[in-house]
Length: 197
Image (cartoon, rainbow, N blue to C red; front, side, top):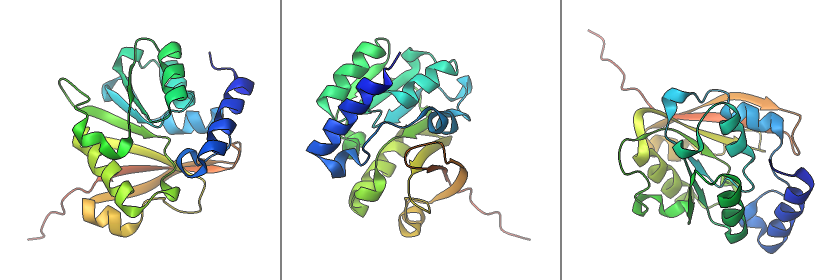
């Protein structure tokens, strides 16, 4: 089980080393983790998690009954990747950059039902965000969903990027019980409109 004080120190140290990459000074809290994972069910496995950090969202998924063996965690930070391997020994931990998802060949068979993203998209270039989303959706089955949180007042993925990728975003909730307060968005493929007769 993660230790909040030790994880906070790790997170803060990583943030000091590279604020734009880590994008937060503390791990996400339990209320945000519950909000991010509350719509994930056994039918959604396998689940892909991007930027899991110390594993707060990962633990919330496990607490919801998602087996570690159904989780693939992509983490860029060396220390966090090692920590995740210790905490979730049956999960697949990939030490890599989420902007290069398409070249990773993450799943031997089948497609993910959900992606959980702990990445700080607001601190990334539009090109990086496009690469992350297009890579993530290449692993999602047609009905799959991508969950992203933000500390900002609106969806962290701009309308032009959503349009270009044929996606739509919906705010599914927010919590003031996080430092800082956060909102969660669900991103899906747009359903083609049926022509009227």
